[in-house]
Image 1: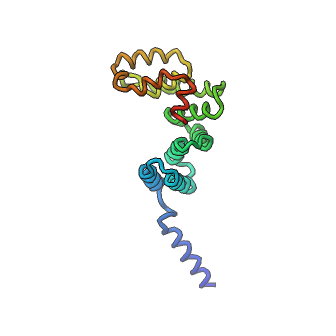
Image 2: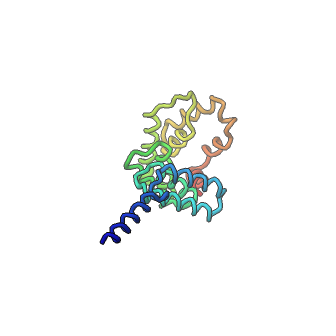
Image 3: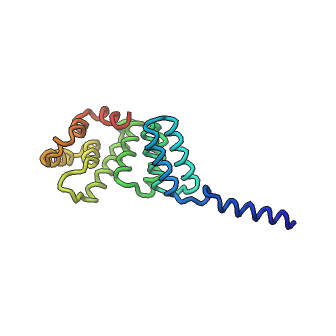
Length: 190
């Protein structure tokens, strides 16, 4: 009986001292982030980075940074439904504006332009308006959200951005803002 208790205690101590069992979310975030950078688009290495995020979320299922990073990686890998599921979980907890915008674009990419998609974009645009912008020029994501929400605010933001001189410095953004809706979403989520 004492041998069994001693063996059980030893096993519990070893499990508790194991580096993998007690690592904080930042450990997984750093490892996966480094793996993504090193992957440089290599599918196998991106899968390895995804496995690190998965492991981190198994141990820390409520960690929003890990879930957000995994959603971004999944979207980048073209796994849109999985990315949207992660962003849906985060949306219930209060997703940041950029995450909201990505969630809407994923919804549009998966289901097309629907009432839900447009309501989603309207929510993002409202989040930008409510937050206010400390810069004298509009944020690119705010302009994109307004554009995709078909908001009259988009024209105002576009004129402000163009008059700030940034249009000449950011020709790719200017080109994207002139694209047809479907082409723009597919440019960002191929």
